[in-house]
Length: 329
Ligand SMILES: NC(=O)c1ccc[n+]([C@@H]2O[C@H](COP(=O)([O-])OP(=O)(O)OC[C@H]3O[C@@H](n4cnc5c(N)ncnc54)[C@H](OP(=O)(O)O)[C@@H]3O)[C@@H](O)[C@H]2O)c1
Image 1 (tube, rainbow, N blue to C red):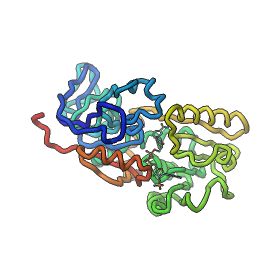
Image 2 (tube, rainbow, N blue to C red; image 1 turned 60 degrees about the vertical axis):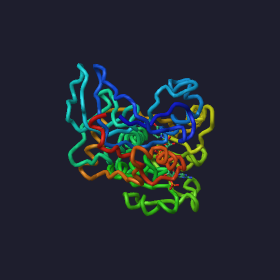
Image 3 (tube, rainbow, N blue to C red; image 1 turned 120 degrees about the vertical axis):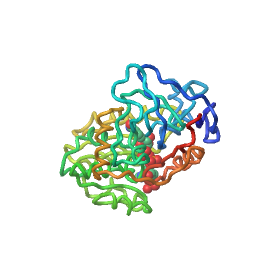
Image 4 (cartoon, helix red, strand yellow; image 1 turned 90 degrees about the vertical axis):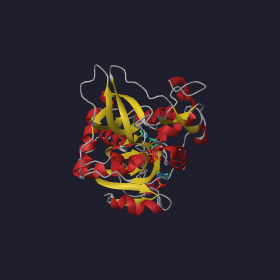
């Protein structure tokens, strides 16, 4: 089979398309023939192993432990291990894995959900990391109908899901993005869109019941100033990615700020959850959620796709389609 393989940490040039052996599922795994994948900032962090702290947590000290990147996947079940009960060969599924930039991958059955008939492979391939982060991030912020919700980073992979899910939950949504994406953010349901180059949302008169912050471009104190008295600030991501331990320092800063004052400030990390995958699949199937796809690349162009994502200005998701030319591999 073909796969995008990484022997060393580094820039996208460190990735190459190779012919490798097809994996075999263990008793608890499903072998998937991949139809599509999508790219997340997580992939380029894994590719570069930055911040370096990641190297102490299973990524590999000097070389990648997992040589194939890609966490979001859609595919068809090719074979199942002896203990697998929820999938059988021929099932169309989607979810999360390690190594979706390839023709085949082995996945735990608990990381997969059935792909509804009305959901395309490309759409399903966007849902795992970005969709789950948006859904769980909004829940972490205790979203309720009628809440005023602000999404900072509204035009990216997570943001385009968060805007739509918050609207579907009955919130009044403000999205912060660049001028070129203001129309996009409005078109997916935001009641208000703020161009960050022209307006600083922390300096306005409005306050918010929930701020889902995906880019951390304003200080924590400034965010706290525009939280409603019972509001919640959810810190989910940052543009600033230092070489060493920056995610941890952000977590500590958020926890420290939350010690003073009534308004809640919480760090947030999404968790794989099969039930949430099912919810997201159903939302897309019912038309309440439409993944925004910025660009689609073939498997061989994964390095180009990651290069594009790393520039930090995608509008929605970047999808990888995996060609159907591997029956004999
Ligand atoms: N906590 C978790 O569990 C979790 C899970 C997944 C992802 N994340 C993190 O969440 C963040 C977002 O992920 P993603 O997949 O949405 O990334 P993405 O698809 O690369 O989107 C990044 C977005 O940031 C926006 N942006 C750039 N500068 C901005 C600014 N000054 N103000 C507001 N927005 C700005 C860009 O919009 P414009 O083009 O309009 O500038 C772009 O759409 C990343 O840091 C990622 O690592 C966290």
